[in-house]
Length: 424
Image (tube, rainbow, N blue to C red):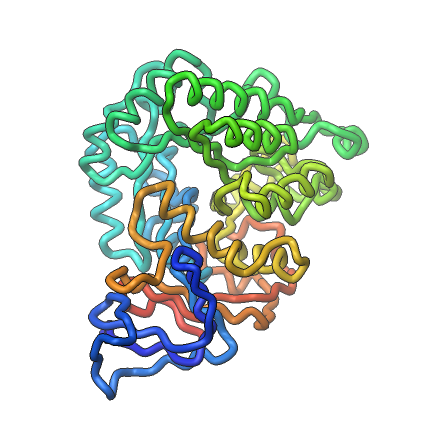
C-alpha cells in the first residue's frame, strides 16, 4: 500500500500554520514533506481539483460501545464510520460494559484499535465503574494509552470527588471531560419549554446543564486545573464559559452538530431519533451556540456519536435511549455554517481538527512538514442524500436520514494510507 503521494490542485487549508492557498501537498512514507524535499517524480497523484485539503478531522467525543455492546457498534465499525465522515482520529468514551476504568481495558481498546481504519484514543473513567465513589487509577490508564478521563454518560455528582479528579489529572497532564448535568433537575425527556408542554412530555430545564457548568468552572478556577465541558447545549452555559475564559480559567468546551442545526421543534412527531442528552434546546440556545463557535467561546465540534439499535430506539419516546450517530454527518452539517456565513472555512477546520488535537495532546491538527499524513480531502460542493443504505455505522439512529447534505469528505488518509476514497 502506497504511503507516498502528491495531492495536486487542491485548496490547502492549514489554520495551524496560517495557510490557505491553492497548490500541491507532498507526502513521503506517510509523512507530510515540504516542497523543497525531493520525492520520486513518478509518485501517485491524487487530483484534488475543486476540493479542500485539510488536516485530518479529529472527533474528541464518540461512543464505540466495545467492549460489551458490539451489536450497536464496535471499534472497527465505528472507525470505518469515522473514516467515511472524514475523521482520521476519534476519542472513545469509557461508558462501555465493563467501564473503561483500568489499564487492562484501556490496553484492550488500544490493541483492538491497531486494526482500525483511523486512530482510536481511549478515554478512561474518572471513577471506578463511573459510579462516582472512588477515583480510578489515572496514571495506569494513561500509561496504557488513555488521553483523557471522564464519567461521560452521567455527571460526577460529588463535588469533592470532582475536585480531586481535577487535581489528580493535573499530575498526569490529562484533560478532565465533564458531563455537566445536575441530575436532580434532569428528570425529563426533552427540553423544558413550550414545545414540551404542547407534546405532553416532561422537560429538562437549561439550568440542569448550566448549574453544573458553573461548578466545573469554579473548581477549575479554584484548583488551577483544566476542564473540558462536553456537549454544550444552552445559552447560559455559553455565557458562563465565555466569562470564565475572559478571567483566564483553563476551560475548553465542545458542542455537537445537532445543537447548532436542530431545535426542540424537531421532537414534534415523537421521533426518538431526536431524543438525546442534553436535549435539543430552543432557537435562542441554537443561535447562542452558533455565535460561540464563531467567537471562540466553544473550542471544538464533536459528534457525541452514540449508536443504538432498534431495540433501544423503537419505543415510546419517554422509554427510548438517548443519543444519535453523527460521524458521517458532522462535516456536511458543519459546512452548512460556512454557507450561512457563521464560520469561515479555516475556523471550521480549527474546530474539527486543530483544537481537538491540542486539547487531547495527540498528533494531528496541522499539515506541517514532518507531521503524520493524516489528511481529509473535502469537496465543498458535493451533494448527497443521506439514506439508510449509505450509513456505514452498525446503527441507524439519526434524525438526518433523508436529508440532502452538501460538503463531503471524498478522501480520508491516515499515516499516508487511504482509508476512504470517493475520488475514483
